[in-house]
Image (tube, rainbow, N blue to C red):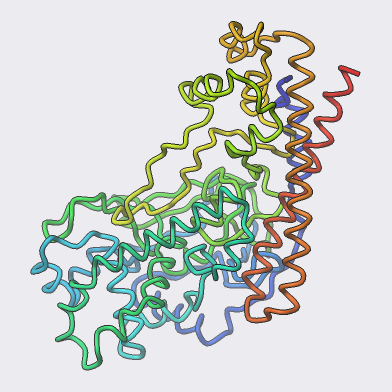
Length: 461
């Protein structure tokens, strides 16, 4: 398959995925933001560049009060505003953490502090920040089972793993929570409930910035790299922007500089990385519309769905693909005591359909799987990108088109089911809308891939 990554292609994609211009509605007058600004000012932070606003499509975010040039500092948040494990250890929880064996993980310390401070309500010095945090999240760990069932199969598997591991993480910490009973008049189980702990876990997973901390003797040896950054975490993600973000050891501030221009009264974005929509949903609980990195994953069972079951060399072909990292279903699931708790470890090695069509690795895998018995000795040439025969090229394209059509039909069926459920399950409206957005984006990708495949197939007719 020809390389479609040239300059003209990149310019065309930028035009396709460029976000429509939209004006935000200023929200700085709202009581919660007035209190947050006062709280930040007491901690030596005042912002003259950005204001909270509500935007179509992205919701709550930050709007520029002036035009921002490339390289300009957009936010510099003092260390005194950051919530880290240092904050937790200096608090009333510090003595309990120091006594507990084995030592709690940095993630557990942060989750415990968030739940405890949320429970404290007006008595918490962190109340102005806690008040602007989401009351609920749409990470897969928070989705209802009937909604998870509507996700694409690879994502559905990861979503179930996420929920299972989060439950295991907190179940194994019940003894530590019980040790905190002297701090509370209420039963500890009513404070550190499953709902409260999932909220804390999602807050860290979706909003923490990377900030490496030195090891602390009272915490387990996992890397301590998560910090919550009030106000800064109102910045939304866009795959179209570039920023430089890091903690400045000299100024003792977490700083973000924009690498792209932003106009006055426009939403200011940061980029979490070149993530597809599956990863964005797993790690952050949202979908990016017109995401240039979005794709549709092809799992092993679908990969061989339209290949002849009589192929005696099929197992050997699959083994070759596994040995050369084209498919790998033995991936490690990360421990949830790790501070980087993201579950985006898809094991299909970029066997995907994208906006430009099927990936090179998907077509290469199919070419190998479609080799005739007399062509099998040429498998190394296939992996190197060589053409074996016109018949092999045509057969692999035909199979790719069948797989693509299968996904299109499946996606249409799921979208119809989501539509019916939205009428019947009003309480699940937000979750169903999220799935609907994901599936609609994937349908567009599949339709674009089908068109690209049809063009390639035309060369063999």
